[in-house]
Length: 378
Image (cartoon, rainbow, N blue to C red):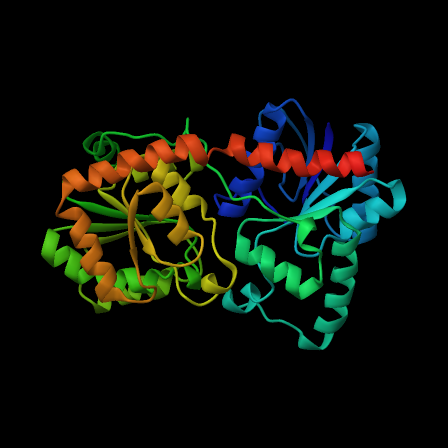
């Protein structure tokens, strides 16, 4: 199968969840024997094994549609897969070349407000009607969670049989267990129990809850906290840590190369995902970080929100806490850190679950079925 994969807003050089998702899904689809022509906003060359990468033109929808048509003819492509809430380029290529297309959605419009991006309410109605037409023309819509799929079904009136839920995955060869002491030596971290978070520092990650929980964990267990990643919340979180008098025990690592992330997770005694109730209860989650924690064999303490609750209950790899509750998070982190044997058992279960249930290979296989059905339907 020849696939035109459109991730037109994604910069693969950025160590973010969206770029990792695109890179890994494209790589594993190519590993399944398909030709993948990937068009992104990445400047310069990109090395994704087995994938043919194309840098999109700078601006202008008409120009981008023409460019994507040229790429599709050169393959020649059989189907389009566009990761975007508004799949106007796939729609345009479909109108010109007749290629079927599938849309992938990983969030909702309300995220713009949570990231501080203004929304122009005057044109929302028009945008909604146009987007609905594009979704109805698509062979199907892929979402990462059941609740997000249900939200798309309700909001745009899509038939349920055309909404496909395909969770994220993890490269279980790259992310694998390490001896914590060896990982800490590599990072020049002192010997101590470490609680590690990896991800984008935005509101819905719930990191203010983690920082507010940190004093009790630090005092009770002698722990240190590492926050790996960057984002708009960083300065606020650093100020909060200073005000709480724990700045010397909370390390803001910043962004790191993706290939280094397993070492940071490997250095952890426990990993944390303190998601907020806002946004996450409405659409559910399939977060890369939690799959990576499991694959590295680390116990997880996470908010009990849809997607995460089911994942940790099925895997037996961690403990759930109420969202937005620093005291409950602190108590549960202490519970894990103070029982290394139990923590190790949870980590072992998580590793086995990730290998058997959560690989990118399984994710690519599920997306492949949707794409093949689109080709067959014409």
